[in-house]
Image (cartoon, rainbow over all chains, first blue to last red; front, top):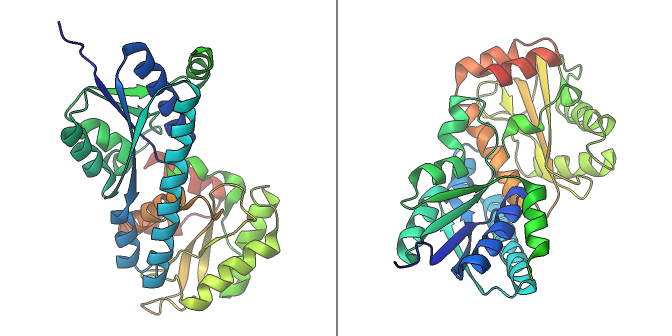
Length: 162
Length: 149
């Protein structure tokens, strides 16, 4: 029987939940001998929406786009460092667009077997359900999805990894 | 992070007392300072005024979204003001702002900042929700409205 999980991808957005997800993905990759990918999506759709609604000025959009590019590099480097400490190779991917669309696209393009996402904020309204990007990624991804819950337990697992 | 995760009674001013734009921004910044959400009210106030100087964040239908990046904020933070009489905010449709969402974020947290602003942009399209929000007279009513939506 071939290994069911050969490629794992974790989505990182800079939130604490996504960093916890990255730690769990590292644990899994090491335990399963799987390839690990980390993805950050620069949410250009949200930027465009803010210009359209006139909350952002055009110049502000450019400024925040640069900020988001900086965030992407910083957080992906952080995941690289977390993985390096545990001797796990990781390939980082940065893309831009609508978050859930980009996640789905990368899953397909890379042939990912398991998508790891951070804990999803409590859904308190139908609007949350419609617009929460992690929620939408979970629903749309064409592969098994794992939601990394239990920050303390995951931290212990990550720390115990040799 | 969902907007509701950032909203608590201590960051809501309902009713907002200020009668003009600068005072309204100051009142909301001071609310955040009092709630322990920001380190320095003056720095945060200047950041918001600097942004407003480039163009008003007064939208249509009585909504304003003053915001800024500032080292005075340790994390993304929001204050909500409900002004029964409205505040002249230089809005696109000329109507006074009755709902003010002040958002402050540290310079290295662009992602959550944009996410929160986008959520407000979407919310502002719901006229029924905004009308209900504008009719709130206490912070508790605002919180309940967000949670019960």
